[in-house]
Amino acid sequence: MKFTVEQLSSEVTKVDLDGPLDSKGTGAIDVQFADVANAKKSVVVDLSKVNFVASIGIRTLLIAAKAVQMKGRKLALLSPVPSVENALRVSGIADLIPIFVSLDAAIDAVAP
Amino acid sequence: MPVAGRKFELSLRADLSELERMEDWVRHVVERLELRDEVRQSVLLCLVEAVTNVIVHGGESPSNKGIALSIEGLKDVVTARVTDHARPFDPLSYVPSPAPTNLEQAPIGGNGIRFIRHFATALSYKRRGNQNCLTLSFQV
Image (cartoon, rainbow over all chains, first blue to last red; front, side):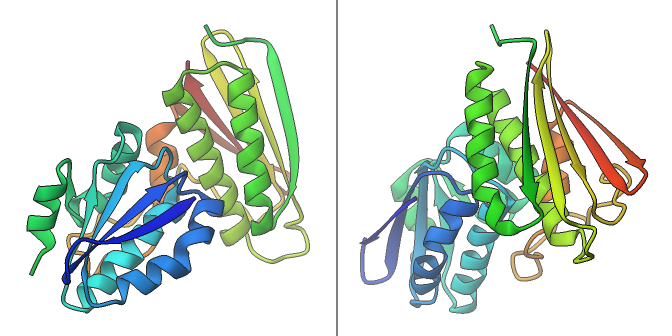
C-alpha cells in the first residue's frame, strides 16, 4: 500500500492511497494516517487506486474520519472504484463520510 | 468461463499474523479458477471477514488452534468452507447492530458479518462436534 500526502492548501490535505485496504495494507498506513488525521486540517482521501477494502480498511477510514471531526475539520472520500464504493455503502460508512467524484467538489465540501 | 472441478485447501493457525498468508492464497486460488473480478472480490472479502471473526472473537481457549479453508470451483458456483475449533458461533443467527446515523456515534467495527451476508450468494452453518463449519457459496 502506497500512502502519499499532498498539501492542497493551508487547510486541506489530500491523501492518495494505492493498493488493497486489507490487513497488510491497513497495517502499513495506520500510523501515517493517524498523523494526518490529527493535524487539524481537513482531509480528502483519494480511493481511486484502492482495488479492495475489507472491514479492517473501513475501520481505518472511520477512525481517521472521527479523529478529523474531533479536531473540528472534515474528511471526504474521492472516486472509489465501484466494488470499493459498494463495500462502503454496505458498511453504512457512505452515509457518514461524504463521497465525491470530483476533487474540486470534495475540497469545497471539506474546506472550512 | 470459470474453471470447474478443482478444489484448493489451506490450514491456518488461529492467529492474526496468518491473515496475510490467507489473503495471498485466496488471491492465487480465485485467479486459478479464472473467476470474474466481482466474484473474486466477494470470495476474498467474505473469507477475510469469516477468518478474522474466528481469530478475533473465537476465544483464546486451547481448542481454538486451527482453521481449515477450502475453495472449490463447481459448474455454476464457487463454494468456500471455513472449519474451526473456536467456540460455537452461527453468523446466520447473529443480529448486527443497526447502521449508525452519525459519525460521532458510529462503532468501530461490526462490518464483517454484514459483508458476508451481503456478498455471499448463500450461506450455511453447522456445528459438528467441537467444530464450526461455515459454507459460503458464490454464483459465478
